[in-house]
Each structure stands twice: as structure tokens, then as C-alpha cells.
Amino acid sequence: EGTAVLCMGKIDVYGPRGTYQIVVQRIEPQGIGALQLAIRKLHAKLESEGLFRPDRKRPLPAFPSRIGFVTSPHGAAIHDFLEVLRRLWPATDGVVFPAKVQGAGAAQQIAQGIELAGRIRPTLDVLIVGRGGGSIEDLWCFNEEVVVRALAASPIPTVSAVGHEVDVTLCDLAADVRALTPSEAAERVVPNRDELSDVLHNVQHRLRTWMTHKVRDLETRLAGVVTRPIFEFPEQMFDTPTQRLDEMERRMNEGVARRIESVDRAFEKASARLESLS
Image (tube, rainbow, N blue to C red; front, side):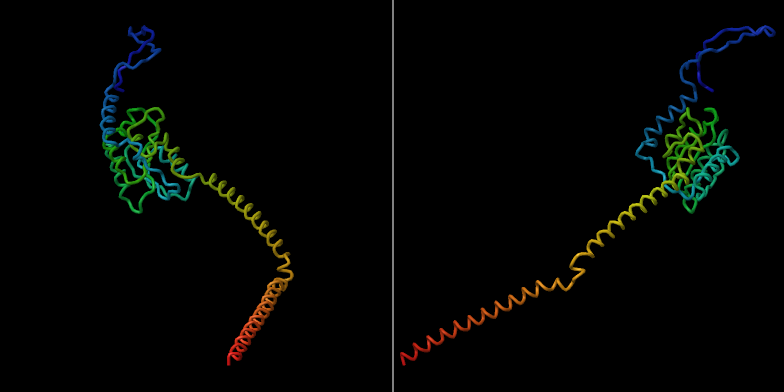
């Protein structure tokens, strides 16, 4: 709606009413429609303020315990999201912030839901904003400036799950993570219980195998150490040092005796000289 196009096809006449109609075979854009022009201007404005910078993106927590979702409580989006959440990671609590997701007043309600989610206690781990698919007109509230600014200012890591693979909304650019659908948003924010269980089992098996090999290796080394002579005949470890000590004692005694004899002889010589000199 609002996009000017150039249509090419075949002209036909509806006989009963005498009206002309065109059977369109090809459509090409003709200029920029009002909606596209508005979104381009707002995109340029917010981009210049840095709201879409990659370095502003925050990582999602690995194991969130509380997840908020700003959406319509009656739409298929919340049903699909909770269904995937229960299947993948049932330990997580989901908090829904009701809001209109199209039509007049929707943007204001979505922005209010985002602000409320940032103040709730206990603090949420992740906040998702979105709805199921729809036309560009249905999704237009997610291009409103008030919603984009509220999302960018959220103190909680955010996920945009507007549910449209082709059209990228400004919310998708402002959020920390973009999901194509609410179901994919659930898959992005929580781990897969079954996959994580398989990983833990593999780690457990590898750890048990490593520990078994390690214990066997230590047992083999211990058995080799125990069979050494020092453990079988521990008294032998004292034989050599005792023999060395005895040898050192013998040599010391002999050295002292020789020294005394030498001193005695010198003393006798000195005494003899004194005696000769009277």
C-alpha cells in the first residue's frame, strides 16, 4: 500500500458491464511510495544517532531463566513461542506483556510493554518483541520511532521476532538479535535440552574413559615402583651409606693418630734441642 508501480499486461474487456481491466503479467516499482519514503527517512535519522551500530549488540545469556515477550496474548505468535519453549527448555519462565501488534495505538502499547519489562523484578534475562507474519501494513507499528527507541534503550538483551522473512523492520535493526519468527526466537534464546543432554553424555563418557586410562597408567607405574629393591629390601638402602660412614671414621681416626704422632715427634725434637742448650 502506498507504493507506485508500473504494471504491464493484457487489456481485457468485461462484456456484461463494458468495463476495462488489465491482466497483470509484470510489475515494476515506479518511484518511492509514501511508506517506503517515511521508513527511509526514519532509518537515516536513527542510524545517524547510532541506534543500529553493531557494537551496541549484546550477547544473549546461555541459560536464561526468565524470558519476557511483548506481543498480543491472543495471537498465534505467543502460542508457537511457548510451545517451542516447553519442548526445548521447560525450566524457563515466560512473562507476557500484552500489547496490540497492529492498528491504531499499537506502537504506543508495544513501547510501554518494553519499558515495563525493563522495570520488572526479578529482572528478565531476555526480552522478545514481535508477532506473527503479515503484510507491510500489518507490521508497520514495528517501524514506529517510539518502538525503535524503546527497544534500543532496553536494559535487557532484546530479540526482534516480527515474523516476516522478506521485510526487515527497524525493530530488527535496533534489537540485539533478529529472529525470523517467534518460534525461531525461542530456539535462539534457550538451549536445546536434548542436544545439551547428548553433549553432557559425550563429555561424561570421555571423562570416564580418560580417568580409567589414567588410573590404569598410575597402577602400572605404582606396580613397577613397588617391585624395586628399595621397597622389597629396604634395609639394603642403609648398607652403602653405613659402609661409607665406617670408612670415613676409620680414615679420620688414622689421620688424627698420625697427626698426634707427628706433633709428639716435633715436641721431642724441640725438647732435645732445649736440653742440649741447657
